[in-house]
Image (cartoon, rainbow, N blue to C red):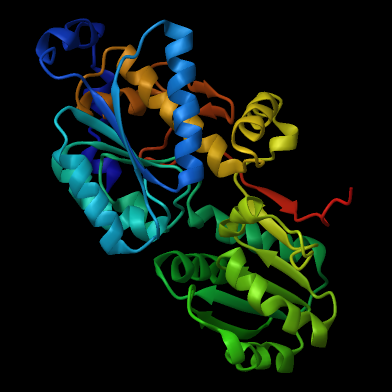
Length: 367
């Protein structure tokens, strides 16, 4: 567990002398920060790197930015192996999702390189190791958030259908949700796994038949928006505008948009409310102007993550272990880091300390 391996007393005894001599101990190798994320998150990282140079006059670290074409464990391990092998690597922003981040975490912890996962929420990631941090709350918090939304908005007896992706992310969040929901008051009438990325084609009817037969009042979708997009029309043809509460993975809808209005009205858990975060608005506008589409919370967090790691290096951290100690001190021995997403500090298990929010996918705008 993090709480054992972080050695909090040692962190408390850390003196400024460590930081003042860091350059002398590791001056031969320039620090490197790597990434293994989607192309949109790497765009945000490039903006962060450029902004850091503009603010400080020169670059403090080199970068090694890898794009991940998918979220498979094999891809993540391959990317992590390349990053770990790079001399001077002190921290990595990655990976694409919880499964990928978990698969790569052992390599980073063995190499004593900080891993900062921007959007990975699996509960097991809290136990990945002392060098594993994340910028979003874990599913241990998201499950109760989804359950609370049902108990607040629906009368006792409302029927709940759970549809979850059958991977580390989906199974973990399903467990967290079921533990938090009072199933005596809100019975679960359907509980079905699914796979992402498969050719669903004519199987759509078979996939949604149990859901339609159960006649739920609310559907809890634990999975990605692309798969939800493929099954929701069939569900709504039979059940009308049944409420869909979706997990944080649905935040990815912002990249592809909702031009055909299929996802309109879906309520989903998000990491940030960008409309209510004044510091994020200029970033959103700059990003949209530069890359041609509106970023979501993931891009904001990737930007903050890169700026955070570069700040650690500018404060004297020259090894992965020193970056780890610097992150552990935030909000404890020193003030929390102020990012455009808000204050950033981490628990003893490396989880960011921030509440989740609910948002609704809007209808497409007409011009």
